[in-house]
Image (cartoon, rainbow, N blue to C red; front, side, top):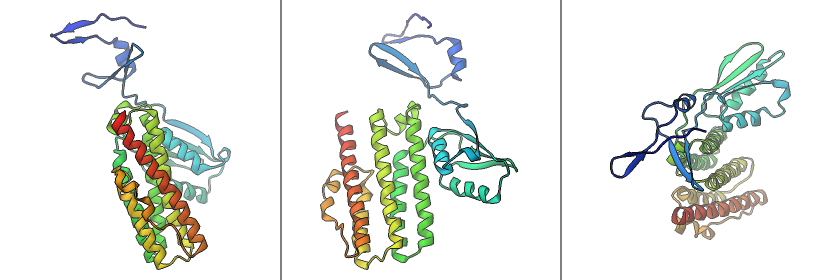
Length: 289
């Protein structure tokens, strides 16, 4: 613990000096931004909380039971370098890793040899607007519906991968908001409850995309697609948090003469009801907290 005297600066301001050791340890420089919080009469000074070394992990390929989920965990937790070690690496294993990395914006293979693959996060910082990402995701979901109408299933698969990639990026940003106060402020994340709420919203959007993707295998009708188009139009107001739109969810048709399609539409209905509830939570948070 260090002690410092408060000094008067002008008529209405006060200042304290920070120990040089703190500056060096936290990689701070002149004019850098720090945050001061008053919690239970304790003044807490914190930095942006970027860590340059929480980055590296080295694992053996055979020890990982689910490679895709392992890479997803690393991505969301902010691991910037992953080294995967092999006994005798095959081309099929390399292709599998490349395919998985397509769902994680910023991750790419930075080095590869016969015994290992090194994956690096190539972006310097992730100062990205969460709302813009969700708008982009909703736009892609609408494109998925258009490709479903055209029966262009190859393009539909590519769009589903892109939605999955944006979901992973959104989760990564929210996880970083737990530690990075600047990123939290930029995305209007005031507390951990909002992080949980946005995570649930992202999960529901992901399930909406999954429902559309699953229709590819079903014998849907023109009427089904028309009803689905009306349902998806609801998403345009998801990130705008328009209460009047969310209250009219019952005007959409969530049924079909095809049993399998009907089941999928019922799943959509459940997810849209959850999205409506989340919108109301976000609106209340803006109004009262």
